[in-house]
Image (cartoon, rainbow, N blue to C red; front, side, top):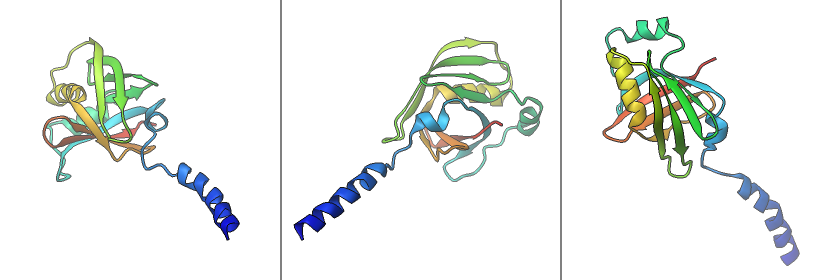
Length: 148
């Protein structure tokens, strides 16, 4: 009986070790370009911006973030930025440290996009094609998709 129990335990341990409820952020984010699809609040309501749909449609290389192993680069409308990022799959904390910027923007959504990147405090719903970043303050989010 002890041998059977030991045998079953030996078989089960690899399965338990393979189960990990935390996200592997490196494999989910790195090497992809993520594009903003919307800002929204905790109720799931999209935060409207005048002219946002047209700006997003007419500027396909804007409102993006590209992740590398520990660094990232991004672009609002005309403003570029880069730095380092950290994410923890156990606590869902997430942050950007911007150390280089260039250009400027005057459109409200572009300014808010850049400021929101600086204010990210956590993430949720991260998978191979979608990412939601939460602002540190308040209950606002940004939703991203993988740009193909």
